[in-house]
Length: 284
Image (spheres, rainbow, N blue to C red):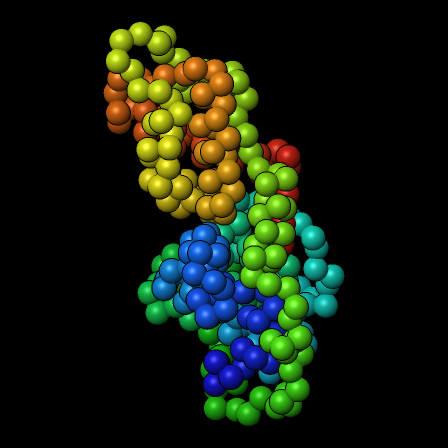
């Protein structure tokens, strides 16, 4: 049922192009785009499918019209913002997709909450114990029992956003999205970089830029896990950081573990500080 209902929502076809990229993009484009796209791994793809299933269910069963639904999540009719400013420390929302996406709109709050509930490995009762978000999860649990076995009121075959109507190519979509991300991502100031790499250049010391690029994959994974931010935004910060280190002729310290800790700590502080200050809004 869920797969069929995905078509009703229109969102999977309209917004999550990564699920179609293997079939529709040329080999070189597919490799470059898919590596940074949503759904690029089996785990990420499942997250998106669970999320989009929530939208399909809400539309098919008109869940967003229920008074209790509105009290828990807000009005789904609220205009979608072009960007939003999340509160990373808030316990009113579950954490599922990157960028605290549940905080972007009531409909996304519902979809993210449902996705966590649907994941058999989420252990949501333990994970969100004493969080206000737990009430939303418990509501989803009760609501699914309520509609279980019932026929959805919306049974039309009309496609809201047919795939055939999409004229935007994968390349164009990701170029536009990446352009928005490139326009606003956290950067280190010169003084911050000198604090991370304070050592003088003498002897056989590794260049700071080489260290950053060598640890890039590890830093991407670690910082994304700690901040729940976009891997692509972090990638942009790391590339800018390496270039600036070259310009400043900075070198790394002699202790490899200390270098790793310093880099992770600096990156996490940079991203969290940017969000808390309101300096960076996240594109929807």
